[in-house]
Image 1 (tube, rainbow, N blue to C red):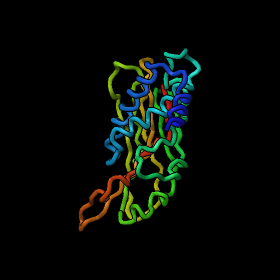
Image 2: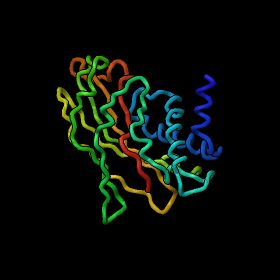
Image 3: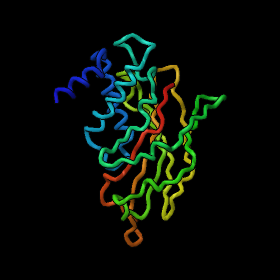
Image 4: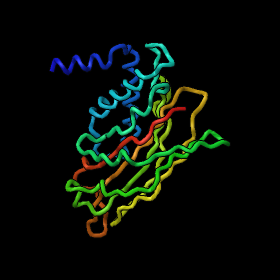
Length: 219
């Protein structure tokens, strides 16, 4: 226990209280933005776990002095692969390609995945599910206290029944520029369902749902 505390202290050495507070605020906003796409987000633990990679992102900021560092200027790749659901983990989700296509004519980015096979989503934990919904969700979160708690979320969804091939998913995102730094997180959400007669029901245990950050960027 003491060794763990020492390692944690070394990992966060040099962080200022204001930076830790901002990381916690951002983590809570990200969790709020994505909650509608995960039936079983892990309560308060999600924000606490999400704070750790956010603190590492802040530490990686070399543009600003300690105390004024921001996630917007850090290595946002450190957020890639964050899994919102503690109870289930599918490694292949991290291998889904997520690209950004910036428009030359306006402040807009097309967030896009390639098509991929979703066999990894199916295992003994969800073998009784009959179909599933895959969504690409992009959430925009301000990185300065006092700004609007959430700017927006955008999503595209595909409901797949008796097939494993997921078509390409894409979401157009209007960037907020020349104001407060904004953190954009693109996540892949997978929800499981079962057919009961002619009605579709959420899978018996929502803890099997997946929600993983594929890409994070700032503008």
